[in-house]
Length: 293
Image (cartoon, rainbow, N blue to C red; front, side, top):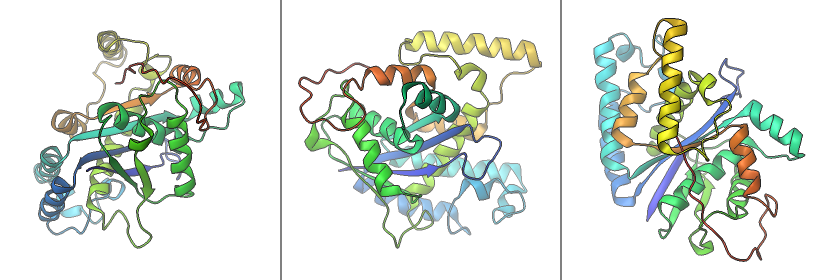
C-alpha cells in the first residue's frame, strides 16, 4: 500500500512577508520503503531529534552547529534529500495563490477554503498518477483538520474530469492526537518539500500571475519561463534566485503538482459543473489531462 504523508504549511498564519501563498506537499511510497526511510532519516539527523524548516532557517537556533558551516550544511541537507530520493515513489505539492482565491470566491460567490483546495490538488495528483492503487494519506495537524480534509476530498470527488474510482479514493486523515511532526518522520520530509516549493514560487510570482498552466503545453510553459528569466535578468542584472536545496530536491525526487492561480481556478470551476460538493449521480466521468509546473 502506498502512503502519502504530507505536512501542511500555512504561509499566512504568522503574517510573514510571503503570506500570499499556501503550499501543501508530501511524498508517497510503500510501507516497506517508509520503514527504511525512518531508519535512515534518524541516522542522518544525528544530534538532532527532528527536522523543521522554519527552525532550520534560524542561524542561531537548534541547528546552529550545522548552519555555521556552509559545507556542513550542504552535506547535511544533501544527505536528507538522498534519503528521500531513495525511499519515496513521488513528491506531490499544490500551491494556492491566496489573493487569487479571494478574488475568485468574490466573483463567483464561492467559499472555497485554501487548505481544502490544496488538499484537492494533492489528492487529484495522486489519483492521476496512481489510479489503481489504494492510498492512505496522513496530514500534519492544523485547525479544523478533519473537516477540511473532508472538504478537500469533496472537491476532488465533485470534479467531473477526474478519473475517479470511488473504492480507490484515498483515505485521508490527520495524524493521531498523540503524534506530531517531531515523531512522524515522513512529515519532516514533506515539510522540506513544502518549504522549498513555496520559497521557489514566491520568487517567481511575476511569472505565475496570469499564466494558465492547465491549458498550456509542457513546452509552452518552459518557453514562457525562459522568456521570464531573460526579462528578469535584463531588469535586475542577475538571474532569479535558485535555491540549492530546491534544486537538489527537484533533481532527486522530481515532485509533481499544481499552482492554483486565478486562471486555473476559473478552469477548475468549469470542472465542477455540478458544484464543489459531492454529487453521487453525475453520470459518465471523463478524464482531461491537467498541466503542471
